[in-house]
Image (cartoon, rainbow, N blue to C red; front, top):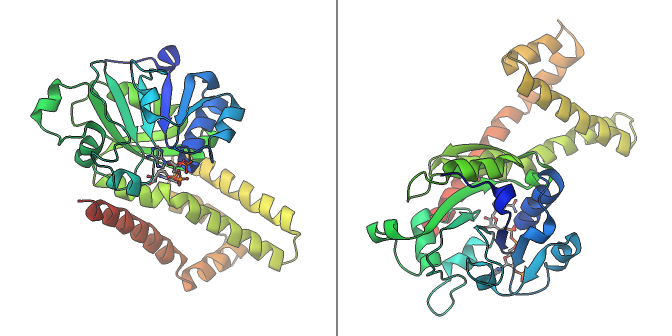
Length: 292
Ligand SMILES: NC(=O)c1ccc[n+]([C@@H]2O[C@H](COP(=O)([O-])OP(=O)(O)OC[C@H]3O[C@@H](n4cnc5c(N)ncnc54)[C@H](OP(=O)(O)O)[C@@H]3O)[C@@H](O)[C@H]2O)c1
């Protein structure tokens, strides 16, 4: 079954922090959603102002977003910290849904498993009975580049089957490159993409620092470093050649580039990057273990 989200339009967000802002900005600025059809909920008004300014509807009550309630959303993104979901219990429910209308929940919480999410959201364990239920929970691992429509997004399949897989993927494809992966693989997506975006910032910054050291003004150095990254990424995306082949094409014998590549290898940059992705992936795995 497919849902045309541009048609149904009502999308909710629980948690109004950085990830929510990236998703909402992407949907409004890059996917053409009307802000008045996006509904954001958080306990305080600390972060809600920027969404209200964008024209979105805001509330301090999570239940307002549920089907049949005030804003009646078809799909709700869960954008709180894992610790918030972890401490949820009967005395502190942040979302308990017992309605009959289908509800798609898309969780961005790092490490919180689908089974745990069913406990938190439905206030009961996932079991076969829920197959009769109407809550379709998806876990995703996005990054903040969704805000400019160039994010990445690992999605893992809903425990209730693939009814809404295509709809969820087509929604997220409006702001990111998406692939379905297993729940375990979602941790590696956190490493390469969720956290990886910060590794790329570090690399760009270092390239710019190098150019400043060699005499360029900071803003010029930074722009050249950014554009070099954008160009290289586009070449990598659009060329049928292997990355090593693309690299070799730039390395003339005894030229500048092979000297630079040697300097990178001497400083074990490739190894450092592999370590960074591995460390971030393992940290995401730890989040998962911590909450069981
Ligand atoms: N940031 C990233 O790059 C990134 C990437 C991938 C995944 N994620 C995941 O995204 C999630 C959110 O991260 P973030 O960086 O956006 O966090 P954040 O900036 O700290 O925002 C958390 C939001 O949750 C709200 N909140 C707290 N308790 C709540 C409750 N009971 N009901 C509803 N809302 C509640 C907070 O409300 P107030 O505004 O009132 O404080 C705040 O708006 C995390 O689970 C993280 O694993 C983040």
